[in-house]
Image (cartoon, rainbow, N blue to C red):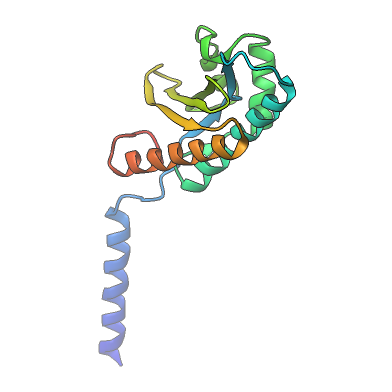
Length: 180
């Protein structure tokens, strides 16, 4: 019995020592602000603007959900982002606002900020542009342009899903050092 107590005590001491010197694998993920996606439409096609506004809103939400679920980042609540955008940048394109993305991200406590837009060439041809920047340094940590086919939510979501899967693979390969 006495020997069993000593063995348990040694095992417990070894476990405590191992835990004390092992680095934490549960480091906090970086906070990512995803700015509302925008559209650059050079197709010349007529149609209600509200259709694309709704698709862009859904694309922004879908992208955030995919990134959060992938474990890449903790995504800042979209309502906080929308409020900061309204306060800092009412009316200009976020992709060309001369650094306002950093002011928006700082206002909501984000470590990194994502700017995304869809370039609609035609009903058939589109590209999804995404750039993630480190707020402290201003350095771009991730940038992708993805071609896709179709001017509908399903096509846009597929492009976003492919982009997030690529981000996860890049992170796992050590190409995105700041991601969780």
